Image 1 (spheres, rainbow, N blue to C red):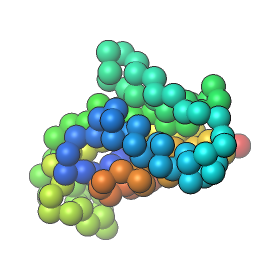
Image 2 (image 1 turned 180 degrees about the vertical axis):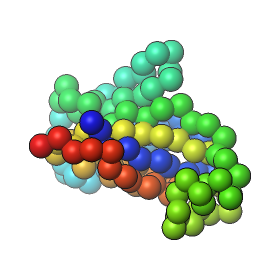
Image 3 (image 1 turned 90 degrees about the vertical axis):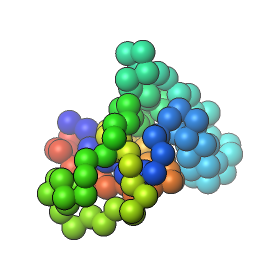
Image 4 (image 1 turned 120 degrees about the vertical axis):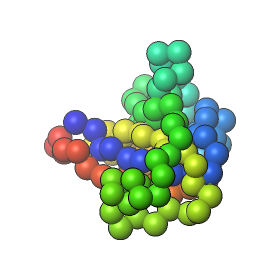
Length: 122
């Protein structure tokens, strides 16, 4: 099972935002010498995957309007979202080493990324 994350942002997360975040993280991690990344839309854009060297490191679902603050507090206890939060985006990363790159991409977005664990495959 993949690692589950949620990103709370003021603007919807789109392919351009993922591409910018992936490029900044990828260059920082690889020094610009690593395998290039590819953005792969699936299901008419319902999912956007980030693929590095043929391996999926991140799958991002289409963003939705965030629930009101009480509901966010119930679902994400202890998380303080910025007042500008309007969008909720779910994402999944694998547990293998590439998943760390996926998590770093989510952390590079303009918002708050919350990373959970649904289960771990070793």
